[in-house]
Image 1 (tube, rainbow, N blue to C red):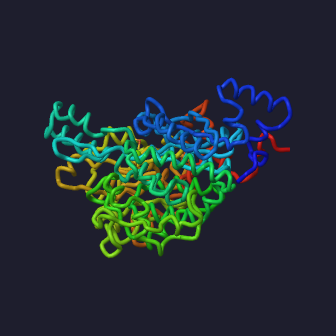
Image 2 (image 1 turned 60 degrees about the vertical axis):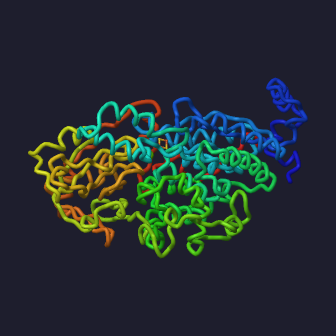
Image 3 (image 1 turned 45 degrees about the horizontal axis):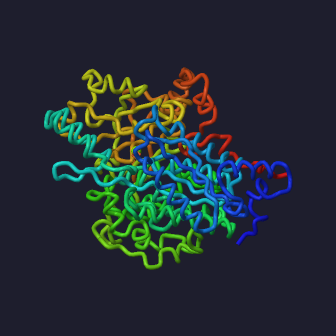
Amino acid sequence: MKSPEELRSHQWYGTDGLRSFSHRARTRQLGYLPEEHLGKPVVAILNTWSDINPCHVHLRDRAQAVKRGVWQAGGFPLEFPVSTLSETFQKPTPMLYRNLLALETEELLRSYPVDGAVLMGGCDKSTPALLMGAASAGLPAVFVPAGPMLPGHWRGETLGSGTDMWKYWDDKRAGVIGDCEMQELESGLARSPGHCMTMGTASTLTAAAEALGVTVPGASSIPAVDSGHDRMAAKAGMTIVDLIHKDRRIGDILTADAFEDAVTTVLGLGGSTNAVIHLIAMAGRAGVKLTLDDFDRIARTVPVLANVRPGGRTYLMEDFHFAGGLPGFLSRIPDLLHLDRPTVCHDTLRDQLAGARVHDDDVIRTRDNPVAAEGGVAVLRGNLCPDGAVIKHIAAEPHLLRHTGPAVVFDDYKEMQRTINDPALGITADTVLVLRNAGPKGGPGMPEYGMLPLPDHLLKQGVRDMVRISDARMSGTSYGACVLHVAPESHVGGPLALVRTGDPITLDVENRTLTLDVDDEELRRRRAEWTPPPARYERGYGALYLDQITQADTGCDFEFLARPGAVQDPYAG
Ligand code: FES
Ligand code: MG
């Protein structure tokens, strides 16, 4: 237990000077009695609630449960509204703003009288953003995942947000269903607050947070509107006060072992490829060197056990929750985890998992009956991607995993949309579709363009997958032989910029290679002729982003935020 003088916030409230007098006077202005807050740990609740964000719309209420927990444990809760990242609404992509929320998080925690933080988020990028900022700030912190929305329903079918939206949109285009059905679907696809309830990017990243040890055990799969979500939020409030007293900081939790276990978890869940970028960025903030090769190495040791769409075939997050959730899943792979590391609620992960069980072997598979024998992500290298690329090979047609074909190159996404059905391009099932200028700077923000559409004439012939290569990302709900995150990206002159239509390209997943079969002399000639495309932004945040963003293999953090080095506490020195 910390004495009041040992708390960081003491420097704001407890000293004799004019400044503390002023801070106390202003807290009276807020309506608090001295005995309600003086000497107590101050807990900042960073809330990404917004009217525009359906994934977080319940968090305004949920913050009250966090406050309840903080008060009961003897702390002083203060809620801070922070930037909301809504995957659905924010354009061109919320990936552009992940680092902005991380920066906001870090600076709020540093500049205010805060002893510890509760971070509330869950829609795709908000989880890594909050954890990156908190890791840089270095205080104790607990993450409250927003929780998945309830399963969608329509005319007796269970619907997954995202995945089924595309499916029914195609049905409408094909004339199978009409406007009346679409109107019903509009109300059925997403029927409660909460983030996407497939194992897309949101569920993958909140599971990673739980595996890292920064949530209450079992938190990540609790449906957003379940009463258990309130109880979890209250527990998070109690936990942060305990962590402050123990001086257990986020850096004590976010260790190299914790990141290895998070990678193991993401791969064993058959989770989103986006997690590769986010975990590398989060690790970087925690001073842990995590690389693409770590993902490839670990993938070979982890079976996919979560039978949750889209990686699995059948279930949604609510099923996963009632089958045992992440504790149940982790209880199936204890030999692959580092069990002696601390979490926010327990001294060891081993203690945390004591008693964890699986209640449905079809949802969370046994080791001898996995969804896939190996983790779903492979890391490729070669002259087309010197700094790496990734492919979710379990979601691709097996015959394409070793394939050579001629490239058809699109310089940007709009051109691709306009021309993909043009017969003059001569696209066949063997063609390798190449999209460039969709990376961190070229996109900008690496939009989820990576699952390039197949031309209509091939779809009609029954072709369902082709090799596709880009410097873009792909939605956690997508699939296909899509090589993603090619680094360096074409916009900065990566070899992807030098590919010409007709060049042979070889993908070989077993040997982890991606090769442009053009000789070095010719590539040198093409490079000499290459001119960089114009910058996407001239001013404002976009210009800062272009100036600072790093490539996919290093996590797309900002250079000045990823850089090591101390930042002074405002009251230090
Ligand atoms: Fe927020 Fe899918 S739109 S998680
Ligand atoms: Mg998504």
